[in-house]
Image (cartoon, rainbow, N blue to C red; front, side, top):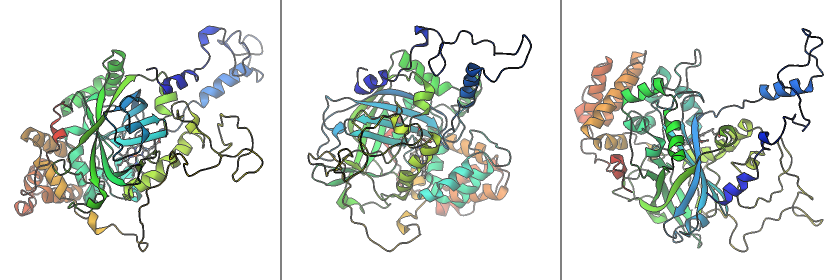
Length: 531
Ligand code: HEM
């Protein structure tokens, strides 16, 4: 790779164990590690056996908490290069110069199952990218669906509790067929659009290399003049979008639960480096209200007919990690890791995420110093007045406060050379209010567009998935209530599902049928492989 991240990683390798005899953590050579120190041939183990105690104690502490969601994943390093300067829209340094390659680390994941669950379950896939830019780390923490299940992050604990195995018996693991999930869906119709994606073949990707990624939220680009532009991010795979069919997915779970992570690893080892194109949908600030949905609503896509995706660069993954735990497990993505030229919007889901990731990583990675871990460490210089804490790996010199007349302490300056992060000067006012915006209320039009854009065989797969997953729900009223919602998406869909799961077909579905809804020609839905 020959990049700055790789050079940095080289400095973190532990001493080569083949370079000499075994030692303790204190560097004392050990003559024998096969038997503990005992009092006599068959006597008890002695407390003074410091090698035994250190070896066992370290082993006892090898595990850290798995991620609360997205626990199972696979990652790889690579690089990103822009096609041309994006200076018109953003001052982000890594999007200016086609000759500059920015190192990246990407982690793909499933969401629901634990760290040891199978890869090919029906689930959303995480697609998180850390760009080690010259201005600090930028994380694009996306999924392979362009929409999310809820609109406000305050519902995330409820949603995840409903999705995870049921509390009394921890069943089901890594699957989307159970009462609590569908109970939540049937009571919270904002989930419907993402549920349509979940029941489609997009939820069983053939390979991480053949999967799209989406930033989901509307973010904001900001250029050197401080002008903002709304932006949605899209990753498009060079190999095209490819899915398994359900029978294959199930067979893979039995034959090779590592199907997706093995595929990624093997491809990179074989030099078949996976590649994605980064595209953006750009919306001028003055067009914020030009759509019949709210740009801040993460359950909505911007149809590509209305705002085409503009390709801005490409990413190649060309190096497997050397140590799964050190790199793939300890990597910490955070939506709030942004660089100058990229900013947030008031999307209430994004705002919650901007709190949640750092908070969870403080416990998952054992304190406030995890940004020093090799995989998380920026290649940009780090100068802070933060000190101490568990696992402090740096020896800081001097005092650590500002203002400071005694020498030491990092001054913050307003970016005299224009390099500091400045927040977009969005005007904010209004009374405090705890209520969902009325502009977030339409939960059916986009699921209907999604359905209308499917080919017949894709519709068959969706109906079969609903029958399989929803059909397993014990509570008949939950099944019936979900079908009532489907009837507001499409009457035919609702009728077909109802017939397969033993609930009455909803009456008047034709009237509610949104046959007039346009088909979404997200060209990417066709997954033709051209980028
Ligand atoms: C983890 C994506 C919504 C909280 C992740 C990961 C991805 C992701 C890709 C795995 C990162 C990795 O590989 O390490 C998304 C997307 C969302 C979304 C695209 C919606 C658009 C939320 C919300 C919350 C949340 C609303 C909470 C309010 C978390 C937490 C983790 C996580 C706590 C575990 C992070 C860790 O332990 O390092 N998410 N997420 N996510 N997400 Fe989200």
